[in-house]
Length: 142
Image 1 (cartoon, rainbow, N blue to C red):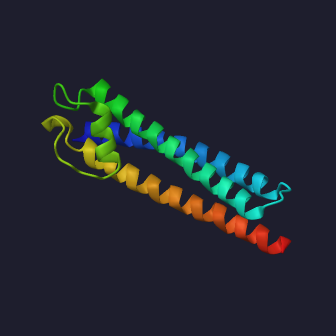
Image 2 (image 1 turned 90 degrees about the vertical axis):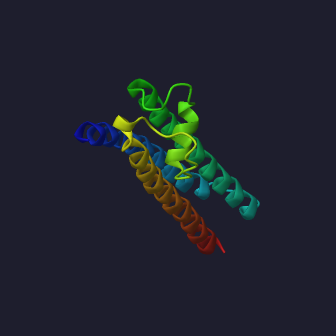
Image 3 (image 1 turned 180 degrees about the vertical axis):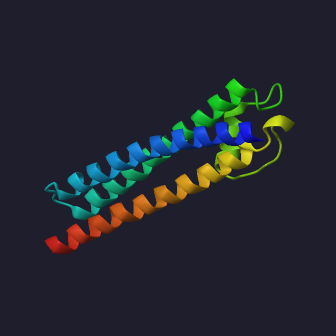
């Protein structure tokens, strides 16, 4: 059990580091983009928000791939299972249950789910921060 916790913790920390880097880039880029001159502020706001969410989705897919890689290296999924699908189901806390980890690795699924839930929450906070900043800039310009 300790090995599962250590390895799952390491993968989670790696994903947190990836997410932190992406969050830093997203927030700083959104701040700069929202200050640029533009003729149609509503269209610009929509473009910034769509870009922000799109980048966050790409980050999450990358983090799922990190889990899938860990699953493949550790041989967590049963033979013939798609580790990327398995990682997505765990990370998104979907929990279909059609693929279950091998007995000796059963804690990694819940750890991936916990990691995904935390990072989805963090992404939601960043989306609202970008929106808050954009509304503040818009209100100052009106």
